[in-house]
Structure formats: C-alpha cells, structure tokens
Image 1: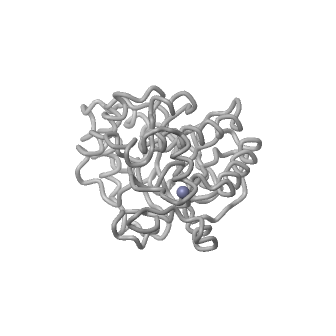
Image 2 (image 1 turned 60 degrees about the vertical axis):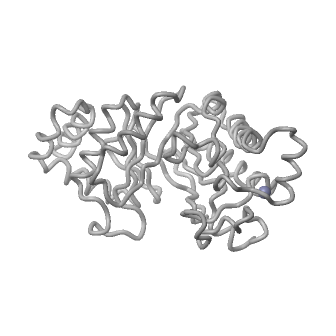
Image 3 (image 1 turned 90 degrees about the vertical axis):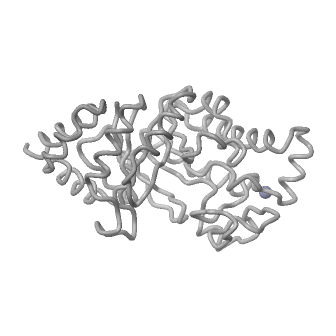
Length: 301
Ligand SMILES: [Zn+2]
C-alpha cells in the first residue's frame, strides 16, 4: 500500500509516498506549482469563477448548481462542463502543472448531479449525439478525461470520484469502465468531520475495489481549512477508519489537511497513542500500523 497527503499549501511533509498540493481547490483560488508535489486541480467546481461569470453556472430544471440550491447537496458551485472557456482554462492549468510537477490529480471533472446540465448548449450537444441522457453525460465526462490524459503524457494521472459506487454514472456521469482506460489511479474522497462508524466507509471502499480496473486510493479528512482540532475527528477515529479501510484490498490511503503542520501533528498524535496502535492489531490492516511504525522511527531520527 501507498500513502499520501492532500494539502492546500505548497509545502510537503515527510513520511508519505505522495504529496499532493491543491493548486486550485473548489474555492477557485490558483496557487503556484511546487515541483516537489503532485498537483491537484478541481475542474468544474469553482466558486470564484461562478461568482465572476454567473452565466457559466451549470443549470437544472430545479435551479442552478450553487451551494445555496437546497434541492441538491452541493459543497461547491459547479460550472457547465461543456463550456469551452472553462474547459480550456482547466486544460491549460493542467498542462502547465504536468510539465513542472511529478503527476496530476483531478477533482470535480464531472456533472454536478443527475439533473445537470440543461443549459441550451448541453441540450443541443445531447440531441446531436443521438445517445440517451445518461450515456451522453457519461461520454462527456469520459471525453474530458481523455483530453486530460492526452496532456498528462508519461506522468501519473489520479482521478477523484465521489463516494457513490452505486449511482455514480446516473448522478455524475462516471463510466468507470471507460474512465479506467485513461486514469492511472482512482481516488475516492471520504471526507467527514467524524468517523465514529468505520463500517460504512469500509463498505464504500470495498464496493469500489470490487469493480474498478485501476488501483484505488481513499482519502480521509484530518483537518481541512477553517477547522480546529475540536471540529474534526479525533485521531483515534482516523487511525481506526484507515486500518479498517486498508483490509478491503485498496491500494492506498491519502490524508487531507490544510497544511503540512497539521499532518505533522497528526503523525505525532498517532505515534504517541501506543495503546490504540496495539488495539488495532488483528484487524487485517497491518500496512497502516506499519506506517505508524515508520512515522515513529522518522520522528525519533
Ligand atoms: Zn451546460
């Protein structure tokens, strides 16, 4: 198994295989690539562009793809994915980062939800395709991924998919079989401010692992932006959910934090909790326990 971190600031941490820098998270802010870190780009989830160009926001019969639209549970504002300007803007950033950094990770490279997008351009493209609604949307998502693949030549491409292994195609346009042709790795974000019930996360991980044709990573939430240690899961919960997910046969685990310092604090807390490391023995997630052992040696050195 491999391990990584998913950070909002361009400073890497020690003790993991992959450092991802969120150069453009869904807030829409854009940083500078760090050649030492893999680059994550949120494509069509973009609060900044949605505010600047409201005519680019994806549409449904039940209103726009905005966080304020309570018909949907959107965690960010979503732009129409057939908008040529938005596509070009993202592809240009991806190309620039692919040149200077070790690999690319893309997020929100899909439709907002099942009823999106019914803007005149999308409806016209759907009609011309001759496909049914679900298949047209899936083809649109796969075609975008194919374009990304063509510009991320010879470097690893991580594709993030929301944690719905059952209705991913209908809701977001994921054709997992087709996407596996272009993705090197799938990453399933499993973000939560608490993990008191690992059973559900383990179920989602096992479900995805059962059919995805490329290596699968999951991503757990340690401490995102605008959080304190009091507003996020206790370290023991994250240690447990990681150990439990590890036994499902997934290929890697990523930990999200706003910055390196929070991962370093998480590493220290996990290493110091010898009682809980002992408790987690026997679950079948030994590779996570070995990670804690490696962190212990690293912190002593
Ligand atoms: Zn549209």
